[in-house]
Length: 268
Image (cartoon, rainbow, N blue to C red; front, side, top):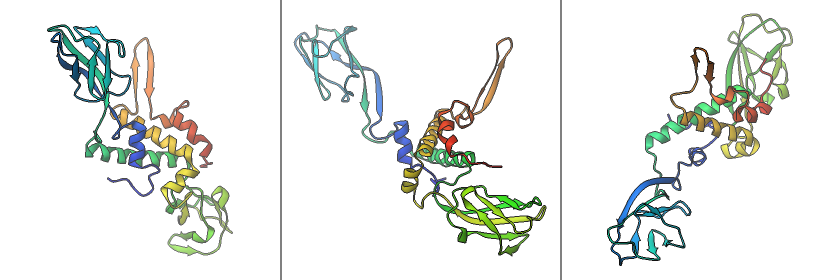
């Protein structure tokens, strides 16, 4: 499944949020640099370290940058040549030359973006990127019908059928997403409503209008990506109690929840 047209964030934005991009840091835990000769003072690393990340040792003794050695790109110059037969090792971070994640990671992230966008829309009762919405309601014998998505773009875009018959007369308060039948919505009738909802026609324009929702979707994508096998379940230990792990959108102190709460509309 590719990224759909109503996904609120792009693959690149999700990767940047997760730091999975061309500038991502990779880790070298133990690189054998060489062996001291007593005379040679210049050695090379396999990669150029991220500034401040290099840990260099000679014979397992930590070396201090600008005191025991200097570094330029991947080239190390010792102040005093390492002693004969003393091993030189290094650990450091370095920047990847290219995107280090495979195509299946891209596909997974796109699926997670689609899912997180839907969760955010369902939770808030909103459509973010503008689109045509078709939804089915069952009449309840009252005059009020509450649409599922806001903001609604224009009254003239609304089409309604009741049990397959087009309805031509109704009133509305689109600011709160309600349609009013001039009589009543017949009990148990199938009511199909088609309308346009959303903040803007493009992803970029929509993001500018709902930055909190953008941040929330990125947070959910990160959570889903890092917890693929541990989304929602509970554990109970005798004598200690129980704990439940949840998708953060629905937890009281979740950052995503707090960001989306002001956008949430009355869904009743």
